[in-house]
Image (cartoon, rainbow, N blue to C red; front, side):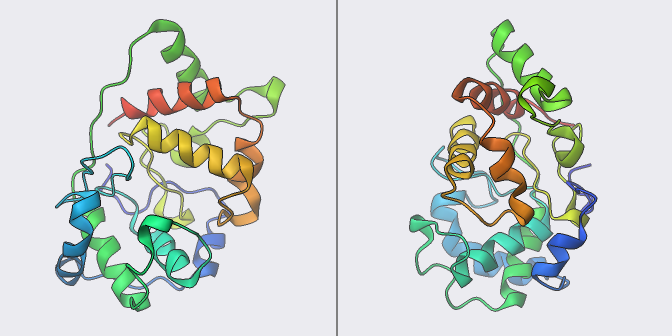
Length: 206
C-alpha cells in the first residue's frame, strides 16, 4: 500500500503541485544519485541513525519537494548543506522515485499502555479540546501519506526524528508547510503529545 504513490493527501493537494510541476522520476537514475545519500539515510533509505529520517517508501511528491526546498533555501537542514545544490528538478524527482520504490521501515512502538493509547487517540481522532485535528485525515489511517496532496508517509519513522520535526514546526524553525498547516497544529501539541504520536507512528504499518 505504501507503494501507491497516491497517498498522504490533504484535499488541498493542489497546494503541493503548486510548488513544483510533477515530473516522472527515473528510479534507476535516482539510485545512482542516491549513492552519496547512503551514509546518512542507508543504501535503500533505511537510516542507521535516528538523527536522519528514513526515506524508503516515502511519497515521491513529498520527497521531491523537500529536496527542492532544501536546494532553494526554503528549508534549512544544516546536515544537507551543499548536498543537493547542483540538483535539477529532474534529479530531485529521480531520487524521490528511487526511494519511493523501496520497502518502508517497520518499527516497534513502546507498548506502555498509556503512551500508546494517547498516541493512537491523537493520531486517529485528534484532541478537540486543544484544537488538534486527526493526523490520519491527512496522513491516512496507515500512515502512508497521500502523494497527490504532497503529504508525507510517517509510519515507521524514528520517534526522535518525528518529535524534532514537530518541535521545529511548533517553533517556526521549519516553515515549508503549505498554509502553515503543520506549524499551527504542532504549536498546539505538548511535548508529551509529540512523544505519544511519534511512538505510535513508529509501530504503525500496513
